[in-house]
Image 1 (tube, one colour):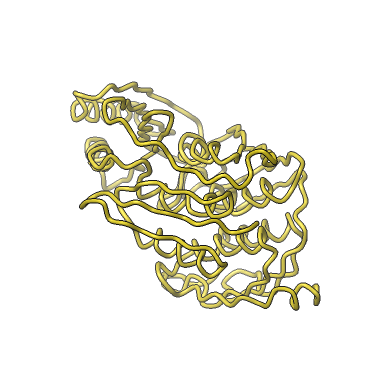
Image 2: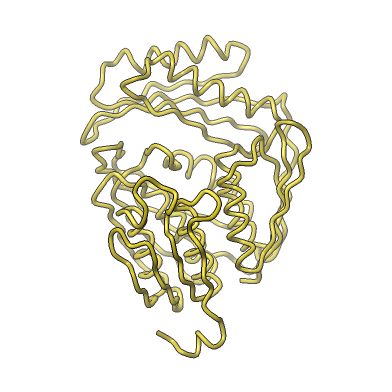
Length: 355
C-alpha cells in the first residue's frame, strides 16, 4: 500500500447496493479507480442479487484490474461483499485471465480495456477464457461489432481474435484482444455522434448453434426474415463446435458507420420462432426510436466518453443500469445528464473527467 497515495487521494467509499445493485458498480469503479489512480473501498457488493458478493466472474475482474496495475487489494475472495483497492501504475504487457465457469469474459475485458488504452504507451495482448455468449452480459459479437465500433471514434482501438465460443453453462470459450494505446492527437476531443438516417439501415442476422438440430437455425432465420420483410437483411447460418449445447440469434443493425448488436439466446422453453420474435421486437423498437445506441449499449458508452473528453449520444431507453453507471461516474468527479426528447428517445450528455 502506498501511504502517499492515500494522502493525495482520500479513500473513496462506494456502496454497491445502490441503483441496480449488481456487478456493474464493481466493474466501473475498478476501471475508474485504475485510470484515475484513486483508492476505493466497495461495500455491499452485488447486494441486490440472489447470490450477493463476488462470484468467479466478478473476482476475475478484481484480479485482472489488480494485475494490470500491481494494486494492493483486500477482500478479493469468493463471496466477499467488501474490497479495498489501492491502484498502482498501469503496465502494458501480455496477460491471461481465466474464468473457470462460463462467466462473462467480455465484462472482464471491459474492466481492463480503458486503463490499458489510456494509461500506457505500448500495445498489450490479453487472452480470455470462459464464457463468450452469456445471459445478461454483452456477447463477444456485441464487443466487436458495436462497442468497439463506437469506441474507435474516441481513439480506443482493439483487435479481437476468437478461438472458441463459450456458451453457458459449459463455458470453454477462448479469445485474444490486442489493445493499442491512445495517441496524443486523439486525446481530449469531445465526441458528438452524427444523427442517424433511418433510410440507410440494414441488418446482418446470424443464427449460431452448437450440438443442436440443424433445423433450429433455419427456423429462426426464416421467422425473422418473414417479420423483417421490408428491411435489407443479410443472413448467415453458422454451425460451430463447443463444449456443450448453445444457440444464439444475433442482429447487427448498421446505420451510417454505427452499429448496434442485439441478441437472443436460445432456451429450452423458447421455440425457434419465439427466439426470432423476441429479437425482432427489440430491433423494431430501436429502429423506430431513431436512437444511436440501444439501451444495452448506452450504459457501456458512458465510461469511454467520461475518460476520453466527454460527449453525447441518444438512446431508446434510459435503464436503471445506465443511471447507476452515471451515478458511479459522478462519484469520481464527472457528470452525466439526461434529456427526454420523446417517449422512446433520450439524449445522454457525459462531461469529461481529467485522466
